Image (tube, rainbow over all chains, first blue to last red; front, top):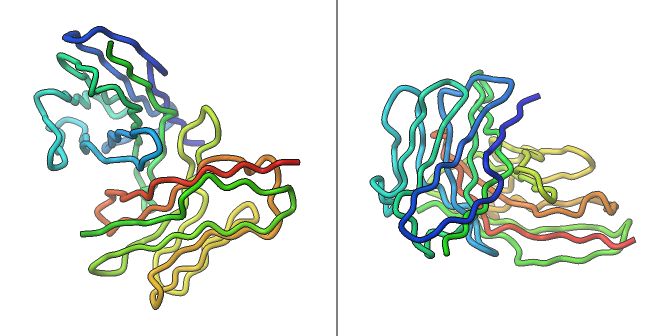
Length: 116
Length: 111
């Protein structure tokens, strides 16, 4: 199989604090992981592409200083929402790309962030 | 730019009914097309895909055909089951691996 986990599955934090979300590929290595954001009843919006050992590539309009991404190993990428505000409340989903010709993305179950 | 438009939900059907969820795309070339499914409490899973015109993707009784002339990739199943209840996402990419998703369609099947 190809399993991707996210931790935590949900988190509540206060405005101004930072929160870290982990994305792990449990049974395969992933040089590339993706971070998405999903608003209620809307599509998944790609935030950034995370590459192991190098800086993440952010999509237009995504603040790199606010959404810090670290891909320190072939099985772990983290997204840190810094100085969170209520408008950052959302569902964050990661995916990991399995190496090989198919290059299929495997998705984590998502993390629900609520900023109060 | 590239975009994917899919049928608004929610969709509610009786068991054994025929299912169609429409999906169309706009693109400057010929993307690969995908259907993902998200069961409650789980991550998105690839349901089926097609990489070129006239290809048919199929899995678990679901089918979708890549139609270049109508820029469509409609999802169909002849007889749905309660276990098919989930959210379905249409998506496209151009080989750069960045997926563009539709808004998702919530499907509920009632016994």
